[in-house]
Length: 480
Image (cartoon, rainbow, N blue to C red; front, side, top):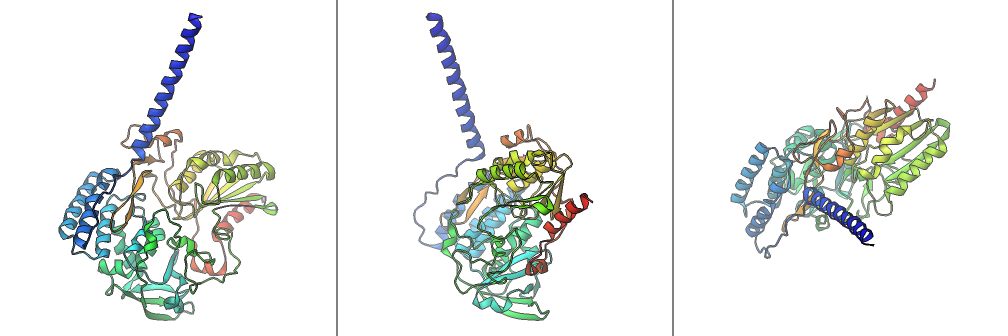
């Protein structure tokens, strides 16, 4: 009996030690890569100077939380903080926002960014919604003050060529340039407040636009801005009228005024990649083409659309339909939790012996966990994968993970990055190496596509999908 008790005590003690060690490991993981920001505990600010001083005092925590800063960039950001603090109380809201944007941008990292909708709590915005196609910025949704310009190509703002304006505003974002132009520029180009504060527009309440209309004529128009929108301040809100990918579908966006008009007719036949835009996960089986189409626009649950059942559905479809070809559409996949899809991405090219090739569609919207999905496909595809489209929206060596903090008065919501990820080689021993990626070693040199295909405004208005067309053409050619 005594021996039995000793054995039981030893086993129980060993289990307890393992459980405690696991708990400590989990605690260390979350403490290292998802540290909470300090509480913003300030008395109510009754004047602009106090409000801006409080926000700057709280923002100073960002320098320690955001690990993406190179040493020289961190020094520049701190110097800019001191200069901004000396001017606190004299800065207009848009000037203050630009100072914060610039300090954040100096880390030159795609994940170290201000949550852009929160800008609209303090700055105005034109009733023209822009989307950047391969051939420029076009107005594809409009309120009444901009309706006559709907479908037009934006050529200039206040006499400055639009590419020059976008180039000048890049210092307030940095990170991958293609991702900036696709994802960030509409937030800047639609706001007279921000462009005026940056010295790029003469009026803070309207913009003088030069637009080339669809008939080829050029029109000059001054478009007044709508006031700041307090709905924008909540980082977890459903305020979706913010990111320009949501403008593509002609469906009415939640919260959009009734009198707004999309360029495409409400009942237009749409390409599969933005048809039924409310659903981020799609499959289509084309038996005549022996092709399974799979789309991910997220790597995590979206309200009403859990991701794990969809991954299981894709695996069942491959087993049942035995496709020769898979078209994996990641061109609007902006990330989430990459582990939800990592197993599928590693095995998708080999899930059925019928599979000859996987064609992966990418764009500058492909970001974060979307990029990891692409990297895993490249790593494990065994020569059976081809990427088509435009370069993905991030680099192969980045800082990611982390959390967000919100300034107490301006309400700007800012993400800080805490984990270093290298998709070109394992990051063992490097500062900030994100532990989870060590279980998924990758050796990717670039996110440039194997076959470059642009998506133009003319493709959009005619309903063409040149990326999908190219994938299907390559599939047909391979069986001849």
